[in-house]
Amino acid sequence: MNQELFGKKITIVVENLPVPFDRRVWQESLSLKEAGAEVTVICPKTKAYPLEYEELEGIRIYRHSLIEANRTLDYFKEYLSALFHESRLLWKVFRKQGRQDVIHACNPPDLIFIAALPFFLFTKCKFLFDHHDINPELWIAKFGKKGLGYKAMLLVERLTYFFAKHAIVTNESYKEIAIKRGKKSPENVTIVRSGPDLSKLKVGAPKPEVKNGFNFLVGYIGVMGKQEGIDLLLQSIDYIVKKKREDIRFCLMGGGPALEELRELNQKLGLEKFVEFPGRVSNEYLADILNTADVCVNPDVPSEMNDKSTMNKIMEYMAFGKPIVQYTLKEGMFSAKQASLYAKNTDTIDFAEKILWLLEHPKEAQEMGVFGRNRVEKELCWEFEKPKLISAYKKILNLD
Image (cartoon, rainbow, N blue to C red):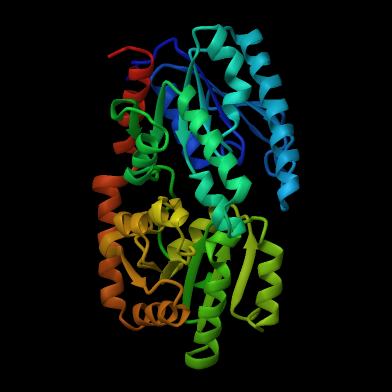
């Protein structure tokens, strides 16, 4: 067994999702433990993960309450509350488990360095930044403007990179940001993509009953937020149902701040018969839908944020061997390549027509799905990313 990090103590701090629900953070945690490290995670608690402390697969998990923000002022409450709990729990970890070798901060937001500051300034603990989302671009995507909020996002991102001894990023676009905007030297930035763990995915035979009597099933999994483009997808579905055909079921899985608003829009368009919004679903339900889906979609709104970000859902669709329709975004195109058709940006009719083309050309759709599955197996799954994660840790701990 790989024990390159034997005896090292690592605390991972993530604010926006609980563990083990956050698949990337959970995969990182298990990989670090497999390499011999003692791993602790600090994260929020939710209805699905309500325990303030538990141990899963040898990982210690401390959870705290979190205020979910929907308005600009609420974000200040959310961040202050999270920083308080992260600081409190970091002190608790250091007191109970001894000095940590690395505090591994996963954004968003780019404020976790504040909670970690006393530990990497006054102990030998190292600070590692795991850059999941580019928050300045996310600010523009959410609020449609720059202003003071955007400048604040740039400042805290820069400070996070300043204090980080090493950074791990999800793709080449983020590495470029780390170097140009974060002023990191290339040798202190490691790309660790969010590849799926094929041993954990329940890939299997389709279950026709989940189509609910429809001839076809189109699936989506992801956050229900403004920048995810579900409103654009509903416009595409409206076109399909009212202009083309009524034998397709659409299952749009996931939770998020815009979920109820999207359900209302779905009702207003009269699409309830064709479109289901089940919210956050179990792994079993997710597998049933993705194993059965004829096509999977990624309607992310074309923006600088989405253009430069690698979306986990694309990797999951490919792992399940599904053909994809998405808009023409840089990192989405890099991930999927020939596994996807690419609609003209924000052209909801073109997006709809590409869904219909795949349903009407099953042979070509199957070939795209096979290409995607092979690409994940041979290039993009977590087994290829795990050594890169361990390499980054060896650099920050001077173990090379």
